[in-house]
Length: 101
Image (cartoon, rainbow, N blue to C red; front, top):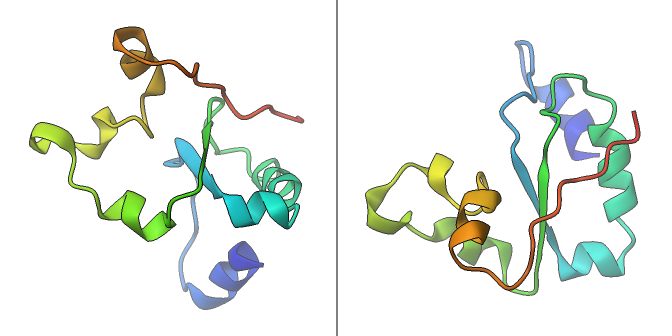
């Protein structure tokens, strides 16, 4: 629904090529929305081949209010580059979003 509303509201082309990670809330899992999100993402060819997926029980607003560590660009965050951080220290291996294309 959100992507459909976005297309109706913007007056220019929309590109999804910048998406590198998706965070699902516990509520999204409980409502069965994960499959719907994956279905929508599969419709757009410009979405990167490796979209990392995450899940959280924390409020989503709290996650995105966090300042990047050492004033680094968000590109170097766990959300954008989980493999680099996993190699240094992690107990949960990052998993890419499965593609249905």
